[in-house]
Image (cartoon, rainbow, N blue to C red; front, side):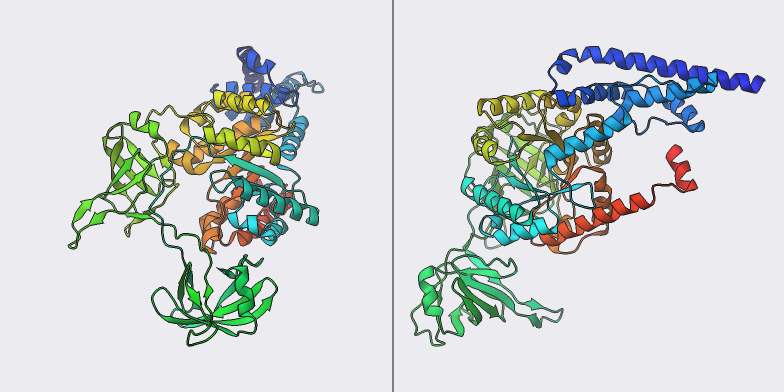
Amino acid sequence: MEKIGKKRAKIQWLIAEISAIIERLEHAEAQYSEELSRVHPNFIKSAHNLIHYRALRKEDIRAIQKKLGNMGLSRLAKSEGHVMASLLSNRAILEGFLSNEPIKMDRAKLTFKKSNRLGKSNAKSLLGYRSKGRRTRIMVTLPSEVANNYQLAHEMIVNGMNCARINCAHDGEKEWGLMIGHVRAASKKLKRKCKITMDLGGPKIRTGGLIPGPKVKKFRPAKDLHGKVIKDCEIWIGPDPHNNPNLLHLPIDLIFLDKLKGANRLFFRDTRNKKREFRITGSTKNGFSALCGKTTYLETGMELHTKADYSSSPILVGEFPRVEQFIRLYIGDFLRLHREAVPGESAELDADDNLINHAHISCTSAEIFNQVKEGEPIFFDDGKIEGVIREVNQDEMIVEVFNARERGSKLKADKGINFPTSQLDISGLTTKDKQDLVFVAQNADTVNLSFVNSRQDVGDLIAELDKLDAPKGLGIILKIETQSGFNHLTEILLEAMRTHPVGIMIARGDLAIECGWDNIGRVQEEILSLCRAANMPDIWATQVLENLAKEGIPSRAEMTDAAMAQRADCVMLNKGPYILQAIKLLDTIFKDMELYHEKNAQLSPAMERAAIH
């Protein structure tokens, strides 16, 4: 009897503790009454649940969780999407233990089933239809060549792209329109709806331009480890690129196509004055295919000939894009970061390799020079280069590099700069953002707002969209990529709930630098939990399968990261030469993981114990 009495006392204690928590959660709603009054009808129940979740997180419930777990009840560890329903359910079961009568449970506003339905519905509204066999959507950053290559957009959708992302920091309205046109056309032809999302650049601090490189292109056949050619370089010669992205484009003007008819070879000297030739293997009305058996460098304006003695009328090489320049920085180097927008360049050395001038590059945000201090850390290009500010004035700062690759790290134009400990007053829509938003509001399905730091940033975007009379149903994705954004996420979510549909992107690159490498895992999990509490779609972004997309081979860590990413509603891939392979592999991983979870819905005894404890 004494043992039974102790059990009843424990249950009574749990009921009292849970009831007290429920009262405190209901009281927390009053603190957010103003925010709740402005919430969109689709988010009312979710907003209440978000407040309940935040209030529950402030409670120390470890003792309660331990006792609930020992009784085989929910430990509330996965209750984000239905906090009140989980508490009421546990209390009702405990009351049933005491009374030995059928369980009578107070009904929560957001039940388990309603929470699940809301999450799915909100994800569909923002991100579009899911692909057959997987719940998680795939968002892909479109490379610039999609503007001139319909087939690439077609293949991206075939391989599994659900959302196409355009970064407004690159290209312009003409190119964006062409990209959107190709995605829409491919989507219609394949009968697969693909959403268009467009990123506003936001107040991101970036490196300025560098001295322009030459208009040179390298054509290199594949070689084995001994340097022997195992496959010729495949080339497409014509005014426009070929639909096959594997064919390297050699641009020539339309007027030169007739001169190539009947020719079987092209002869020339490359930029190194080495004799070279291309073997023409086929032709269409739009251009010629050719093969190159030796490494060749061509430059805009060079002459090609159909005769080996160069006596034929020359065919001029068209416009190549300029080679992207970079500054190579080593540990111990000094870099001058300046306000004036003059092209940057590498360090200047004399004939004996003695330093004359430090390497220098401009910064796109002039205001930061008055806000940072000596001794504060500075990071470049997603943390690939780390330094410390040694000197600073209103026009420039001197940075000492203390972490870079042994062989030097490349710093290019338009790369991100982070000041993780500096108190910067930079946020909101930039002038360029507002200009771009006019196009985005009329042509995209969703606008992505970068560097969201506060509820004010969200309010400013909503107000600007109202000014533009943006179409109803235009989605919003808020990118959380700073410590400030993470710290104010609850307020940001409540402000975002004024509109629908809306979602959160976890931009892990800048976020990792801002919050610290050792904290990014915890921060990412907390953002996912808050999104689940708000029944708001989440997008897992930055460096997903990046090695595969850029190098053609994934790392082991990337594979497990991709598998874990299936928990999110959407995962974003960045562009790269092997992006089609990356999309296809991610699609396969998600489908395999979904099938695995379906087949293993019943836990093994060991897994049950792990889940409980």
